Every structure is written in structure tokens, then in C-alpha cells.
Length: 334
Image (cartoon, rainbow, N blue to C red; front, top):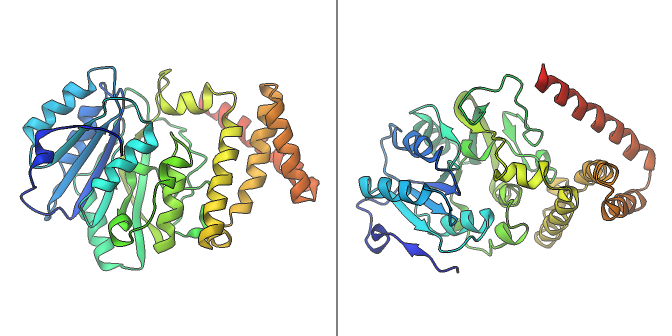
């Protein structure tokens, strides 16, 4: 476990055992963190909840803002200020281990909720539908100023009323993480969950989703109750991982191999249709090899085709993949 600087509330017990633990991972979110926390604190619920905030050694004023909120809401907010940066995946994992609630919700430090009955609605659903492990809902994409993006698009979201293991395919999620409310499988099903951060130090959403889907499907509510913020800042996680990272396709490939190994060991690889991800990875790697003259990406792309056979399907998918990317790029500027 990493060493943490704990706030005073960690030394005492909460007055009530929370039904829900809201996980708030944050890093350099001084511009957005107040809105994120206020959107959680505005919830109208008939149960106790806690807010677990983990700041990953921010270099801006985020820690000071968090301490201000913790002092104002000492019975609700539990705060960890990391003395050194441990990565987004480990930061979120450490919070999950501390969560006391029967259910887990998430609100990342630069996102926010828009409906004050969001938590109540999702908990009411899960309390009466034990066959589901989680519940999500629709969301809007906004820019750094909170303006809704007219043609916002997230390629890794699969909008379905009922999202199961077969929909996952190694990359898809039923919603953006700040829409999720899930059963606390870490408390219900003790196991080794270190893969949450070992698969990749900065991306843990797919890894966690694969494990949660072992215990049920996700249900999607037909209501917009949160906003996902897409920012263009250089220190944005998405920007650093994809737009400014010439090697992102190779990174995705390596992480997927770890997920496949874990699923094969647990006997769930077939359930999740992880092999379907190979064709998408081939397309990403091929584009990366051309665009960035990345020899490693080209080598891996060729090995995927060789192992999969039927090269025609890979190149047909590649053509479709490029057309889709071009379409979304043009649409953004219209």
C-alpha cells in the first residue's frame, strides 16, 4: 500500500454506515473540483453516503480546495492527499479498498452530476433488481467551460438498455464512469483486484468493468443525469494518453493482452468475446504505424493478422475504421 497523508476524519468513525461510497479521483482539477463535489453534495437521498476523495499529488490549488470541503463536511468527506503521484489507476483502486458502502458511485474530479435525485434513482433500481451488478444512465459531453458539445462522441461507449459481458469485447463500457453506480464487489466478493492498476497505471475503467461483469449486467436508465468534460489542456489525461501519445495503440495492445490472460485464468474470456478486440487493435496499430512511422506498431499489426487468418476481413475493417474517424473529425468542425 502507498503511504498517504490522511485527514482527521480518517482517524474517527462515521456516524452512520454509508449505503453508498462515492469515489472521487482527482489530479490538477482546481478549475472543476468545486462543481464536481457540489454536484454530489446536492443529492437528495433517504440514506447515508460518504465521499472518498483521492488527490494524486496535484501541483495546483486542488488540495487546498479539497481540505476546505473536508473541513466543511467532516462527516461525509474522507480525504487522502497523496504525497507522491501514484497514477490514476492506483489512486482509484486505493479509494475502492477504503469504501464502506454497499454500493459504489463515481464522480471524477473534472466531471459533474446534473440531477439531484441521480443517486436515489439508481439505488432504488439496484435495491429492487438484484440480477444487475450496476446501473448507468445517459450523459452529455461538455467542454472546459461547461458548454455542451453538439457532436460529442465517445467511441468506447455502447448505449444499450442492458449491457452484458458479450457487449464488453475488451473495450466497450455501458456509460462514462461518472454515470456508474455498482454493487461493491470488493466487499461482497473478496479477491485479488490489483489488476485494476497493474494492467495499466492510467487506465482502469476497462479492467474494472471486466471484473464487475462477472457478477451481473448493467442497466441503462433513459435520463441525462451527468456531464463528462472533454478538455483540450495539455495535462488532460485523455490528451496525454491519446492525442499527444504516438505509442497509444501499442499501449492499448499490451493492456489487452493482460486482460486476456486474466480472463483466461478466470474462465471468462469467451463470455467477454475478447478476441473481437483484436481487429480493432489491428486498425489502431496500422494507423499508428503509418501516421507516426512506428515500426513496433507495424510489427504487432502484422502479427495479429497472421494469427487471425483471413486478412481480408482485417483490411476491410481498417477501411471502415478510417472512414468513421474521418466522419467524426469532419462532424466536429461543422
